[in-house]
Amino acid sequence: MKVDYIALSVPVFFILIGIELAYNFYKKLNYYRLNDSIANLSQGIGQQLTGIFMKTALFFGYKYIYEHWRFFEMPKTIWVWILLFIGVDFFYYWFHRMSHQVNALWAAHIVHHQSEEYNLTVALRQSWFQGWFSWVFYLPLAFAGFDPIMFLTLSSFNTLYQFWIHTRAIKTMGPLEYILNTPSHHRVHHGSNPKYIDKNHAGTLIIWDRLFGTFQKEEEEVYYGITKPLASWNPIWANLHYWDDLINTAKQSPKIIDKIKVFLKPPGWFPAHLGGFQNAPEINSITYKKYDPIYQSKLTGYVLVQFIVALSAGSAILFSYSKMQSTPLVAGTLFTLLTLITCGALLEQKKWQIKFEYFRLLLGVTLIILLKFPIGYQVIFTCIQLISVIWFFNLQKVNLNPDEN
Image 1 (cartoon, rainbow, N blue to C red):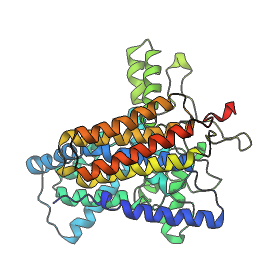
Image 2: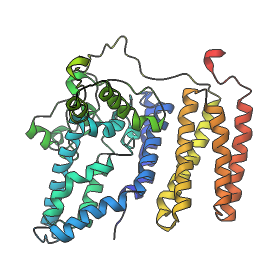
Image 3: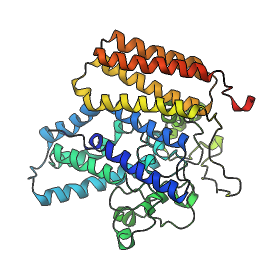
Image 4: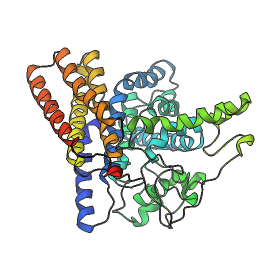
């Protein structure tokens, strides 16, 4: 029986985020920003929903190899569990390292590094497309004969372990720093400082970085994010922007070999006619500024309510998708993603947001009625949408563009 440990852990994630947030306010640490945190959580919701449509297929790939092409029959003993834990962590290291060294893989993984903050919401900022290729790195374990359910369990716990290390509240952990991946080590990994880039790729055990020469101790202050900031709260664009950069670079390259290299070379690589490899720039602490567009404070309540709607809808889908028919599943996922887009657009004050929001609200009511959801759901959801329409209409009386006030 497959158990989605990550989905089951979502309530725990939010409890821990709440604890860190309370600690942040108590200590006045400024680890959180509303816009950045909503953008991070939106990526996590989107990743879980889009993952529904490929989880079975990807697990089937591992399972098929195990059932037809495995070399050995591994018993389910404690020693095999330990060996598999080490194997999962080892292959995670190489998947993660390659995701930083091959442009086509980085185009997916980059999403996790876009936040310019570092807190527990960043752990949930995940690519919607990374799962399409990450599973391939683990296939040697299937050939070796490790049971698929054992693999799924330990790979899930490898992911779960990495949640808590996305914090600045824990500084160092003494002797454990030599063996485990810790918050200090992972802060380095998220740094855009040139000396920190492509370091500390570990999942659970930092020993792989120490063995293979990619370890870097946390020393100078870490500046989080990517070297060319995303500068957007749009969850769709966050998953596509680097692909757009790569395609544009390939179009500017007349040689076929250079077009191919654009996708296979490391980030920063450009053909000679475009200037060659570009190293990450040093960060000027005086001129450094995070992306933080101004928005009307009166929008805050509305954005939070719509985000809660998206979170609630996404959670309902996540815990019941196996019992849902395909049309309601796709419609619910679409509405949730549109709601996440509207939250980001409002926090950026996009000019197209007004028409888009009315369209989204109308679409939500239409879908829930046409798809014949239970009458109770229809009534509750329709009421929420009507309240949102009235609320949003009243907000139009306020100039939502602060630059024009």
